Structures are given as C-alpha cells and as structure tokens.
Length: 341
Image (cartoon, rainbow, N blue to C red; front, top):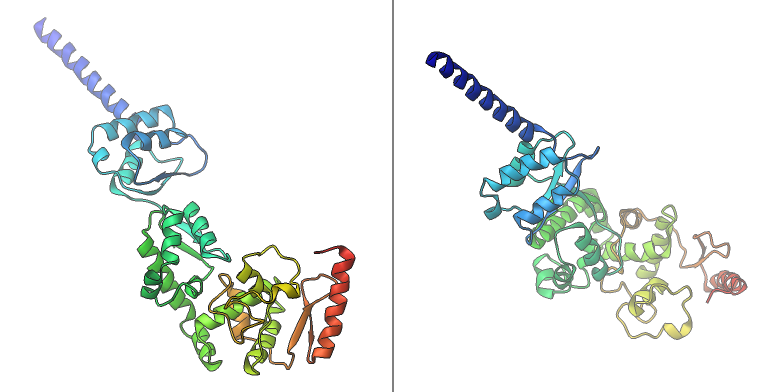
C-alpha cells in the first residue's frame, strides 16, 4: 500500500512538474504583441522598468505580457535598461522580447534629412525622429567651435547635410550623428562631383550655396541647370546675383510673395543685390537635384531671368536688360491682376 502511495505521489509530482513546464513554455513562447504588424518601443534615458513595461503593455497579450513581466522581475533588468528603438514582431514570444531588451538588440531606422531653410528647423525635425533634444542640436549647429571641428562655420554647416535617407539608430549620440553626416557628405562628393566642382573652381560649400538659391527659385528640376548657368554667368562677369530668395533669407520672411525695391536695401551679407558673389553659405539644405544641376549646368549666354506670367513655376530668360524689363513687366502685370501682394 505504501509502495502504491509513493507511486501516486510520484505521478502527482510529475504531473505538477509537467504542468509547470507547460505553463512556463506557454508564458515564454506566447507572442507578446497582439498587433498584426511589428510594433516599436522607444526606450530613453528617463525610462524605468515599470515605464518600459507600460509601453509594451499598450499592445500586448495578457499571457505574453505576463511571461515578459516575470522575466523582467526575476532579472537585473532594472539596473541595466538600455535605450533604443526595439521592434516587437507579432510572432515574438516573451523570452525573445526580453532577450532583445536586456541585450540592447535594438532595430535601426531610416532617417531622411529634410531640405529645410534654417538650422532651428532642422533641429526641430531631428528631435522628432531621434532621441535628441532640439535645443541641444540647435546649440551645436550654431556653435562656431562645433562647426569648426567638422570643417565648417555656422554659415556653411548646412552644406554638410545631404538630404538623403540613412539607416541609423534612434538613440545615436549627437557627436556620432554629426560625424556620420560628415562621412556621408564626404562619400557623396568623392569622385565625379568633387572633380566637377574643382573644374568649375568652386568648393562643395559654394556649389551647395548656389544650389540652395536655385532650389528656392524653382521646384522644376528640369529648369535648374538652366538657372545655374545664368547665375554662373553673373559670377564670372562679375555681376551681383540679385537673387530674390536671398532677400527672404536675410529678412527671415520666407512667406513673401513679392520682393519690392524697399526690401533690397536690407543690411545683410546674404543680400545679393548689394553684395557681389555668393552669400556666406547656403540659404537652405540644398537638394541633390539642385547640387547636380549646378555641377551639370547648361552653357548659355543669358544674364537675366524672370518668372513666367503663366505662374508655371518656370522662367523667361534674357540676354539684355531691356529684354528682361519686358519679361518683368508681363510678370508684374500678372501679379497685379491676381491681387498678389
């Protein structure tokens, strides 16, 4: 009888052990996420164990979340929280998710550098994409010391940023981010572009400066090489560029629709009506199309241009000032008829 009782206890213990193993496997392997698509958890420097679990909990299964919580509670995770952007796929169980969080196995992201006009705006956009504060980014970009370390100054730093899309980690430090942008810039220019700039006797910074003006003149990429040729003709004369976008930049009034004569006396190195040559730096982050338009400019003898009166976004070009005045008169008439101030 005692032998039978021992077997019963052994069976019960074995069954209990199997049940525990089944529950453990269930909790560890049940997917954490109840979403149909991959979800992302962003963990920053202020996060705690509880706040991380709260973020995961917004899209989790009860069973999978219970397993993850058990693993987190019975480990030293609270003392080793790693910042980053973590992907949680629909099929990933608690053990896999825990291992990624604990080991810092984050997922990179695609970051597109925007073609913005000011470094303040760039800082604001980047702060919404990365684990970086906009004030910290802006302070660095307006710091002569920081810019000089990268090979620029506060006027030319915009030329370092090439508006492409980059595979990058969300929690990258500011120093590493700036160095990455510097490397990407050098890679972008190395070879054909660098050689063409040298043949034009212009630096990459100067190419970007002219490209930024052309970008603001038109959104028509096909016309940009033509405009580039006109401005280069003026530079070679030499003649002032007389580019309206530089007046908007000098005034920081980008919403202006018309540039009146009274605005042309603004005291600024960016005023290309008063100053010959290129302004001190780009008036925006130049587009790749704009940069390549300058490097592959159209050779012609036009010295003037004016927006077409049909508001197509393209321009009438002229060789003489008298011809330009006729083009300008037609455009002014069209503006007046539409009541554009």
